[in-house]
Image (cartoon, rainbow over all chains, first blue to last red; front, side, top):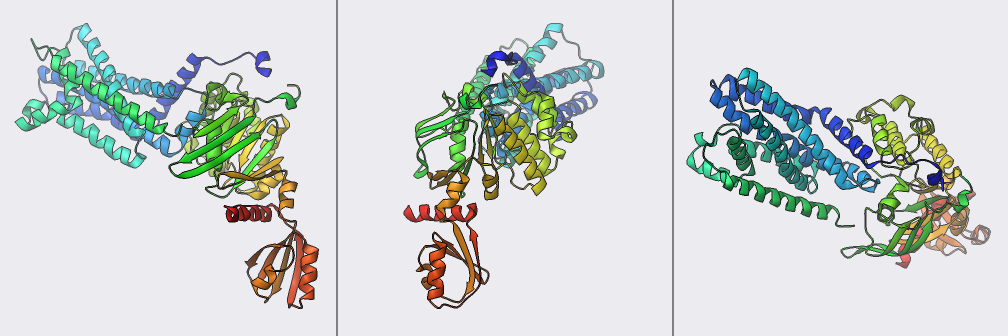
Length: 256
Length: 304
């Protein structure tokens, strides 16, 4: 009866905005999250792509792959490690009991991962433009931003399927392993072509490799080449990760 | 804000509820209505089914059979969740946000949240409002958790072991807040290990054992179930002889003294003196909730 007298303050938009803001602040204020996800890609790119690279083509090539690397960090760590940590601390139970859709929390987290990926992408652009002399058509710069942001989705789903299932310590180990494995063996740090043949073949089974190839196609490093195989592989991996995340979600709700 | 008696939004109803995990029956045929401006304390040993019972009301655990409703709405539905504010056992807030940021976020979940100033006064948040959760002391953390449970202005407040690890002063502060909520017509469901807490606060006490409610009544009624009196004495008489005395419910050895819980203390003492056993240093007190609780759960254990 009181609800009829008091004007309702509730708005879904306000709630989601507050949730996104909270997720971003939480991540920003946690150095163990923000330092590796922000600093690693920028420092590594400056080092290997610009300072030691020596020429514009190298700086351009690596701008593409380091952008994917920049998308991997916040997605995998935010969903893999942070979700597992909050679950261990009983916080996710509080959220599930609270009157907010739990999927809203996951969207807020994805939004946060995208903001981090966007910040790093723009920083990489600055280093590439002023440090490496990289010049691209406006539409190409924009396409890279779009691709990097889209890349956060499948890797967030993969992170989620880890974070909802294993305890925080194991989640940290698994996530680090995937993060560095995907980056190095998927050719995001150094071109896969300088690796021995068998490693180049192994890269084909890594999702990071295919997203890296799409980034390279975006900047025209693969002239006259339609990356159909990479698109198909990227979609297949995305569907696989969505399936795994769905299974993990069901596992979380098994008592419900 | 008229009569709280008509407010049934915070009423929890369990109808034929069972919860089975594998082969373990965590909750056994629960039929129960809790709430409507009352403070109900749920007592029981670990594994008695308290947390499962609470989790089902919060919609975190689904009953194997039966139904749980909050003010008529199915537990776990958005409508039911809006009516509840909960403080869960061992749930830690993210450390990087300040208390104020946490509260502000939670307020957006509700239609008619409590005003921040009101909440600050009620729970005593002044000094910790702009501090990050991670730097708070244990007692301050509990206060922040309580603030989140109350900030939605729900009709039902569920507190799972809210005062564990608090010092006496902080515990009494919690009690004051809880009493105030009940006075305002809110329903409070509390689980606790501190029987004196249930005794001090509750209008109604439920004792759980083996997934069932084994006792249900006012604190006075529950205490009466223990048979009323504790006789403490020093003796070297064998236990078998003592337990055969009339009215004796249970025996416990405390140091060199023996505690006898008796339903008819006068008759027990008469028989004791008549028996010619050597006894010394006798005291007789009314059984408290603790004795009642042990007595009830022991009997439930023997019956099972």
